[in-house]
Length: 115
Image (cartoon, rainbow, N blue to C red; front, side):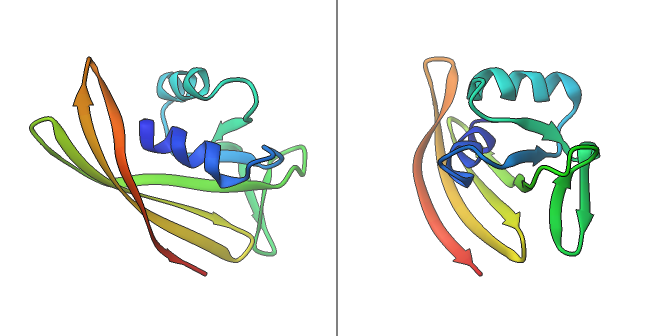
């Protein structure tokens, strides 16, 4: 969840794009709480793709698809990958996390690839 929150905050700094994520409704609510009201976050079921552009169904508002996967946990340390795609472009990141004081924290974030 912390990787998705970081992707949401960094996908576009002015928060003009809708963020689409692959999460169940309860997890989606948790993510929205983590990110605050500045960002508009919806599940991929609200996403429509037309001519290579991701839009929120019913509004036409442009968006970006965010994914966190490849999570590997080893004790109190973890690795995860995350990417976003938007209008024919994408970026990929590698994260190292550490569990401390009851929560996962990002230790490093490395840029991997973009187009």
